[in-house]
Image (cartoon, rainbow, N blue to C red; front, top):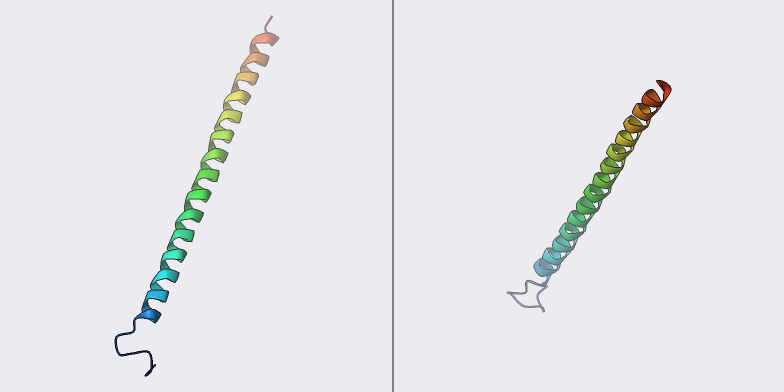
Length: 64
């Protein structure tokens, strides 16, 4: 430490860079997870609508 100088902030800058990388990774994981969950919810909603329409078709077709 004595030979690096009194105002050496390299340890601080390295810690800040690691924190920034961890933050970017965290936000990427959050964004990816939210996107996947959104796609799953849209798929479930579409499947529910298809199931309702199919049931209505069966009910209407059975009366003829």
